[in-house]
Amino acid sequence: HTLHFASNVPASSCSRGPALSHLPQTMPLLKAQRRVRAHCPEQEKSLVRVYAKDVVEEESTADARCERRSVLCRLPLLAALPLFIPFPQPAMAEVAAPQGATSTFAQPDTTITNKVALDISIAPRSFKTPNERTLGDKTVLPIDDAVPVGRLVLGLYGNTAPGTVGNFLRLIRSGALRQTTFSKVLPGEYIQAGQQASFRLGGVDADSSDLQPNPDLSSSRAFKLQHLRPGTLSLSLTENDEDPLVQAGAGYRNVQFLITTGPGPVPRLDGQNIVFGRVLEGLDVVNTISQVPTFKPSDNARQLNVFAQSIGDDRAVRVRRKYGKPLKAVIIMQAMELPLDGL
Image (tube, rainbow, N blue to C red; front, side):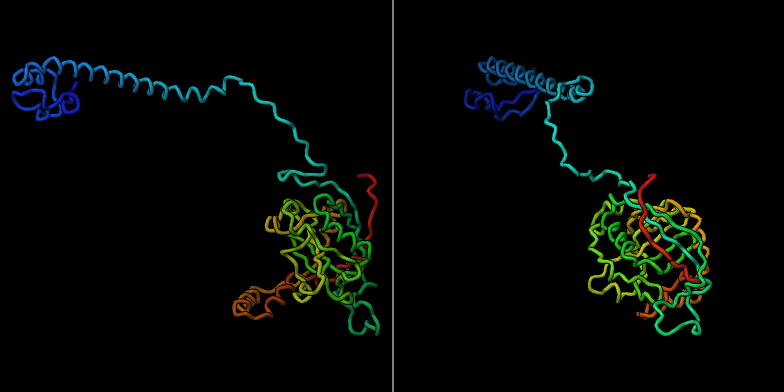
């Protein structure tokens, strides 16, 4: 134990010898007693009392410190008590969710709400020859030479993508898909149709379909479904190959759609294109379409295209839109809505 003199013993209480404030600030008790007895015997008793008081205070402080340390050591155990003791929980009022509300984390609803059919034929060439064309032809597609290959039956997810399904049904009901063609075929990835262009050349005339603004384009829920299996029906956004002038037109509504061919998934389409249905019947028809020969540029042509785009040549983009274009006309001869019987 040590002794602090300056704060406990007055320096002027002894007339003989040096004042206590001149002693060292800390020293053992016995040494302090000897020096005080030599200079001022009458202060020895006061010094002992002061020392005893400091000892008691120090012991009290040490006891308090040990008590605090003991409490801190017990804190982890106290924190773990709720894991072992089932404390009663306060009752919470149950709030009913609004009717029709859906959770942000809920899985998309893949219930089939509508069913449509597309009758497909394939012609031996893309267009009629000049000798076959006549004045006033509404289309230059070789429809008379087209050979039927089967029917695609598509189930639509009207609960997950109501805006996309609504516009697709408008195309079907208005007859805008009849005698239009598949504009792109990428084996192992997808086949694509519904391109808005001149009807005479096999494009979709969407002006007669009364298409509406699509709220799915701004809904994160509409982009959750993935392109995991063959026959996935999706609204083409990143793969859209329509003319930029068409896309910039007043009242433009994107209705171009693609169908994955398999055999594996197409992950690069996920999160950027809206899955709104699947093929219920006719995967063999999808496979037949995927085997149609297409325009495939050589490696040198692809490199030149990349270089042309890097220097700002607009023709590079127009040429690239022709990649995968079928060399035979794949025609949607009929498009109709079917009843939901049997689903």
